[in-house]
Structures are given as structure tokens and as C-alpha cells.
Image (cartoon, rainbow, N blue to C red; front, side, top):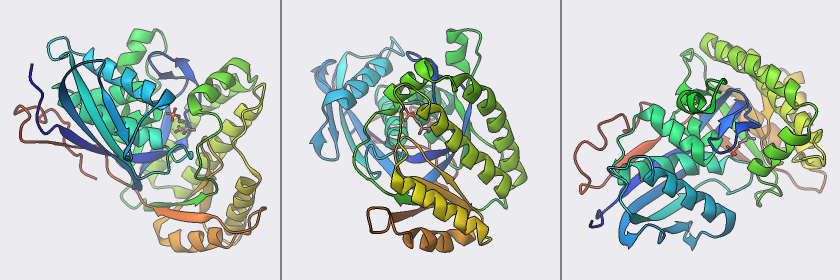
Length: 360
Ligand code: PMV
């Protein structure tokens, strides 16, 4: 079979969980222990191009930000391409792919680069290999690359369902993300205090597994998270930002408490993170609606009303960090879902299945 000239480009944005995903119940199918709720952002995105090569599978080439990918990151991408090729025997050609990706997210800094990366790869690779997937199946596919990527298929507020807990095959079919009904007046933004843009010390996959295996708080975490996800969805539908902010901050603190209780502790919180958490509490005490959340890294993301973004950003830039200096602050607003652009050389109809851009 000949190579498809041109290939497919997909763009996906990062999302930040407001009710966190932390812990899998099935690590092969990437089924989460609980549902989670997130906000897709406009500021951090991944653009990925996939073209098929005149070479057998096994000769895949992966380039990230101009450099050939290596190590565990490469292994994950190759396993994902294999999964895409195995989805549909009719169209799973034995052709290798060339993946070229650009990340506008500081990679590995806890700014959810794997979410935008695997959502973009799912969209570009599935389309390049001629799979006819709707959004729900793209979300399920992206989930297999990185759980949080299932949510970046959609823009704005999103829920990723834990899915059917009774058996893994049913869980696989029912664990996908979808957009949440959102009150039109809910105008939110996020300020990100970047404290360390370097790669994380322990990846989320390994850290989650350690938490599930050794933290005595893990059962309590899963028990409360399902209720938090439902309450966050209610707050989003009602346009109740203070309620959403409270749930989001509590979910982040509980997630970190759960991983701190692992043996040995999984600790992403740094002294500088605590300084930002203090500043967020000070903003609230001064009457500004601001709530903190943190992921698998020391950076702190602050949820606020769109109109308060400048005041929140100024508050964060005014922090004196323990080592001296102030945090670098990035600003974000709600962003769009996955966008897929095929070259003219693709067979007609490949994009007709709901793989086109969703309205922002
Ligand atoms: O999907 P992963 O493996 O990148 O894990 C994401 C974990 C958190 O970012 C900490 C929480 C979340 O729900 O995104």
C-alpha cells in the first residue's frame, strides 16, 4: 500500500482538572478509579502531524519540538500507534507513521502536556489511518494514551466518566469524556503560577500506582471524589463559581494529601507552592474570588472570574518566593476542543464522523 501524501494535523489544548483524576482501576485499559471534571484552556496546546510512510510498522518516527523522541515518552507513543493500528483490521495497514509534534506547554511541568499531546495524537493518528471515529470514541482512544487526554477532546468544562465499574470491557466502552452543560454567565479564567518548568521528578503514571498500592487514604479519596464530580457539575450548570472553586481547591488538597500518605510519600508540593497557596488565601480574604489547584508538579493554577484575572495575576506576581524572586504567571481562559485538519489527499468522508472542530 502506498503512503498517504500530506497526512493529518490535529490541535488539542491542555485541560486542568477541577475534580482530580488520581488512580486507575485498570492500568491496561486506563480506567480511572473515579470520574473527574476539568476545564480546557486556550493557552497551552499541542499541534501534531501524522503521515503514513512507505515503510512497515515498526519503523515509526516521532519528533517532538524538533528533536527525536526517546525513552519512556517514545515507548508510550509507539504503543499508542500500535493501538490505533489494531483498532480496525480493515484499515490497519502495516504502514509506519511519522509523528511530528509541537508542544506549547512546558513539557512535564505539571501543566498537563500529556493531555493535549495524546488528544492531538489520537485525532491525527486515527484520521491518518482512516478510522472513522466519532468524538466519544476519540475520547476513549485518547484515554488509552493518557487518562486526562480523554478530556482534551472537548472544549470548556468537561466530565470524564469513570464508566461501568462491574467489568473492564464494559468500563472501556463507558469511560469517556463529554462536555458539561454550563451556565452561559459563568465567565472563568485561570492564572498559572509557574514555579518550576523543568521535568517532574516522578511521572503521574508511576505516582498514581504507588498511591493506589500504599496510601491508606486512597479508599476515602475515591469515595469522596465521585460526589465531588457530581457537585462540580451542578455548580457549573448553575453558574456558581464560589461553589465550584471550593470543590476544586478541596479536590486538589485531598489528592495531594492522599499521595503524601503513600509509602514512600509522593510529594509534588514545594515550599514555593505553599507560598502561592498562602497568596491565594490572602486574595480571598481581600474579597477576590480565587481558588487554587495543583497537579503532578509544584505549579499552582488559580481559578477566578474572568473579570478578576488581572487582579489575581498581579497578586501572584507580587509573591516573594522562599528562594527569592516571584513566580512567572501565565494567563488562560477556556479553550476549544480537538481540531483535526486533513490534507486534500485523504479519502473523502474521513472527517465526516464528528472529528471536525466542535464549537468553542
Ligand atoms: O493523565 P495523566 O497521567 O497525565 O494524569 C493526570 C493527573 C492529574 O493531572 C494530576 C489530575 C488530572 O485529573 O488531570
